[in-house]
Amino acid sequence: MKMKKSLLSVVLMAVPLFSHAKGEIRSGQLWPDNHGVHVNAHGGGILYHRGTYYWFGEHKAENTSNAMVGVMCYSSKNLTDWKNEGVALAVSDEQGSDIEKGCILERPKVIYNAKTHKFVMWFHLELKGLGYRAARAGVAVADKVTGPYHFLRSQRVNAYRYPLNVTESEKAAMAKLQPKDYAEWWTPKWRRAIEKGLFLQRDLSTGQMARDQTVYVDDDGKAYHIFSSEDNLTLQIAELSEDYTFHTGRFVRVAAGGQNEAPAIFKKDGTYWMITSGCTGWEPNKARMFSARDIMGPWKQHESPCVGPKADLTFGGQSTYVLKVEGRRDAFIFMADIWRPKHPSDARYIWLPIDFKNGLPVVEWRDEWTLEYFKVDK
Ligand code: GAL
Image (cartoon, rainbow, N blue to C red; front, side, top):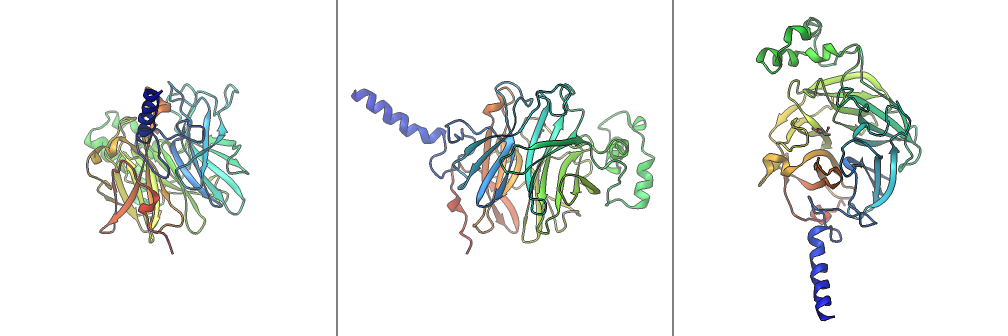
């Protein structure tokens, strides 16, 4: 009996090492939900609505990264205790559906439209069996924040539209670019052509490719879709329609040829900050950072915001979202995923506070921290 008791106390003492003790955020550890099961909401984002945070993310299966369930939703008032609200957007059993079970459905983000009172979910969609060739943006809507979300459509975006940030003469030069003249990839000549819009021109009639993505609602209620386009070589920022379910055709290219993925955006004191990753699939790489005074640019590139040990590999993770904490001053959380492609559901989360030093966002690893890190907003 005595022996059992001491064993039990050892086990109890060990628990905080592997899970989230009350109020603590422990990046890289298992994060049990209200059923004690690791949160399954990867490549996710968070919507704050009427006093509650809703975390939406990819449900990942044990042994495949394809979507077998859909988008999960979890809710929380304190950002550490998460209640499983179930499947927000379910993949379809119908053969040939755009979101057929087994498709690739990544990086879902939900925004609320105050005019239509609808919740709008955007995500990166790859049709079943086509690998990453489709490169589509998918959209679904719901009347209730937790869902069910009804799939509307998926498509490439802004067909026949040129970006706002090209001049007439650049447009004319772009129109002459032909992929057959640049058959050999990664040469300096090819890179220059990419920067000038080789792939944008190639995709003009089908619409632009849309892979890693996020959506952002600005203070004036306008929403923007930010995504890796042009074979993941160039980011595009595109304005969404008033109801947030279409693209208006107004968009800009950002960091042409810069190979950015995993965009996460936030705004502080009138400056937009965007943290991204490079393109190395499930392997971590060094984060990048950009800023702008206008969301449609121009955007300026900075050093990675990550500092300290393992900063060069974004602490083993890849950005997914920056969360603004309500009721705390200048409180933003950098959210990233530590992917485990051999055991996708075991992928872990990185949540770290963003500091501001000399006006620049800075992210440093912390084994554990609480929201007390941020000052209460008075
Ligand atoms: C990553 C991307 C992920 C997923 C993965 C597939 O670069 O950010 O969302 O698409 O590639 O290899």
